[in-house]
Image 1 (cartoon, rainbow, N blue to C red):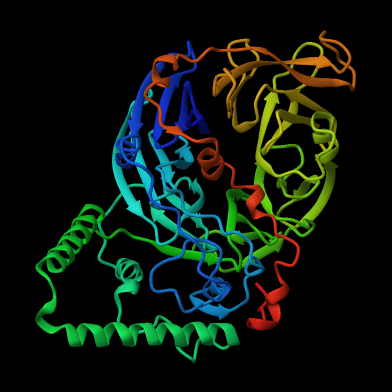
Image 2 (cartoon, rainbow, N blue to C red; image 1 turned 135 degrees about the horizontal axis):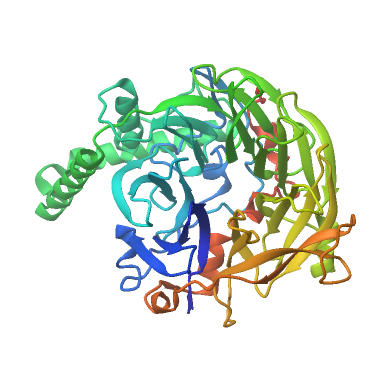
Length: 546
């Protein structure tokens, strides 16, 4: 058994927040000392109780029409590709279904999948993927977190952002929808609360969730027919059972109802507004402003789309599409206040890293990631980019400010770097080799005459390498370690801050290598397999997103 490694990093001011399994640790960036730990309630007994039995796929018919995301109760009859646009649902065919491909399971263990904070650092927001909860913490500015609210989303969140100055959490989910909810929890009795509770109870109805009016394909009609038979059989058994219902079953039912009531009282309806929807599962989300200060929502999905939508209340208006990817898009990066306005970088399952003028959807340049990856793993034929970050190298007497882009890929022991020119093109490619594959990276800006600090979360595997590492970035020539002002200047590293987490190691959650992989390696699973769309003739005709 191995310790589950750190998988999410976030820097705010002089504090580093690092998520590991169901815990969020905070560290000082001045001396690396550990400050505090928040632990998910479900993580406290993770070592004392075995994980639940893995769920098995029943057959292709049951899974055929389900959209990529969580399999919610009451959705046995397929409602494939119900895309929400401007308050209306449009029948579509999901680009990610069928083909007998293994479906990513909901994690059995508590694991923090998203981590961010408000611009002023007063609030930290996290997502626990196994239970679909968005957590909001009060941050005292010194690394101490106090839970303020927990809100369970209808579907599993895949990306979050905090808008400013209206202080809303913008959440994208595996179902393809984007929601807005207040950063500060406020009880609500609005229709959104009622709708969410109805979704939660869909599996308890005595009628199928769909009908012949909403299901048309042969396989979906067959699934609906089977569901109706099962419900009829269940109702018949209940009618014949009469007084034979045991006290144990009644007590179990009462216990379940009481638990649900407690959960509802704990979260007590919150405001939740649907902003927009995609046909496919969403993988990334960003907020950006144009030169006039107008706000936009940038979303990416598994079906190679990057969509630019206006911010609320006009989120149903699509400003542009950035079209050029041929594989899933998983990583987005916006460059505010850059020489080239409205600059966006994107990557995922393609061989390339692409730059865009996002407001118009114009492709500016692209550079190969695969070529760099082959320097580290010569036999590799594909990459799955899991993270993109940027850093601004401060000006010196010999050079002006420079911007660099850093990327990491699943299962490759390196950080890839490029210099970003003022015209939006990428040059000076380089690779910083690591002892273990990175899971997340974060950059601490240069201050007080020091070089930028690079913080990396890696998966040590069986090695003795620490999961949380840092490096002090330097600028060097490709063929020497000395500083250079030529066009060959590239990022390099030297040892950085040592984080004081040794005492925490023994108390961390154990898991097998296979469990760690299932929990933390999810990007490559987004890639469509050969023949995945062969079942298109059995499903409804797709409707364009526009």
